[in-house]
Length: 305
Length: 305
Image (cartoon, rainbow over the protein chains, first blue to last red):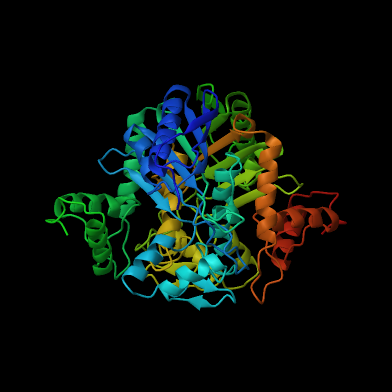
């Protein structure tokens, strides 16, 4: 989406434990980084800290921000809304963003617990990856305007902004496997992102003005930090979280399963691997990268791709 | 489970925004009520308030506590762990409680938004209801020790404490429909409930001492309140939350759907109906109630059942 390269974030309202920031549509990542650090600093002093942000742009990986807290010995949450793509239970219209919940807590090992999940079954990025790889998406992720399953990634991406396709909430369509829970969690994240920041929400996040021209998405975020030492010694908490993680990793496995993971573990190992071997990309993304490099005459990357 | 009728809850540690309570295995509801109100009172003054509780017993409906916040013009969260019943993704052993997430926010109508959902597809109570009604539970809710589906409610309730059956996390078995998200959220709730309170967790919540004798479940809770006025005027927030709810209720419906609900709406309407007509019970529960009434020689209820 559209964003302004100069960061002009402004603290509109502030108290010991809280702040409201207007990001003025500046770049998403630095604003979110500063907002989370502000929540952490407040929590270190007062036990809890929370920062709501309005007029924000995409902040990248939601889990990055709670991990900042975990690395500093706190627990952290990040929530954000996004342009509408999830249909409510019994509906076929994309109303809610993929609205992730991200949470991290420090353990007694190098691996913190880090959950970062969209409240839909799959987030938009996974469908974009399938599109680039020219692969279909699995049955049960997306429905069309009649509520029927869609699997063609390119068609889905074109249909969502026209209200002709919707992502299903975690738990799927209807009530039998509790899709109303994924739906309810998505609304919770929408409320945390909009009803504390006062920013736009749902259809107003589409990135188009009334005259049809493009405009920033004007997202809302909510960051929360919890200082563990205000409750109990950090080492006690780290040990309990580590014990929880180890118990899960050691649980009885299904006959066809190799390994039980905890949230954040695959990403942690992938990060270590990528730092060694580099980032794998598919052919179509490689083409895009080469086109960008050559069009913009960027030099110094000839050895990499 | 076992609980002590006299409430001897003790505030072990306290700051402006936080408190740690040892419930000493007293009755669950009054302890949870006081803990949530303490979080609300702290939030009203400092913007945020959080209370962790250890050695607690079952507090009933999780959504009751965030609704206390919503009724006082705040947003609220309640989390609790519970005796193990959910298997992790790729596992077949019940490791995590049904660990609910409950959240409420005030709107500009009588209906607040209130999400209250176990992080499993179905919570244990629904299986107990199916058992009393002598009905099977739907496919996909529960697996046996080999990972195969189980539907007999009575058998499931007997098998879970023996590690021979597990509830599936929201999203189901494996990764295809994102069951790792329900699993990750269940762990998040376990960490919030244990790693801030310092109480027992997972298998230590089974309610049995090492010598096999029964003991209290020693649950952990975490309550959080957010004072809206610290961010923006309460009426602005109420209006945004109300607008979000109305937009969802008015979204395009699936061809076979009558109505789109928001979280808490069915329960709100049911409560109003029940206040008028009374509580419907099935034959087996009616038998239990009559037996209790007659055994305990309780008088004054002859007209009701």
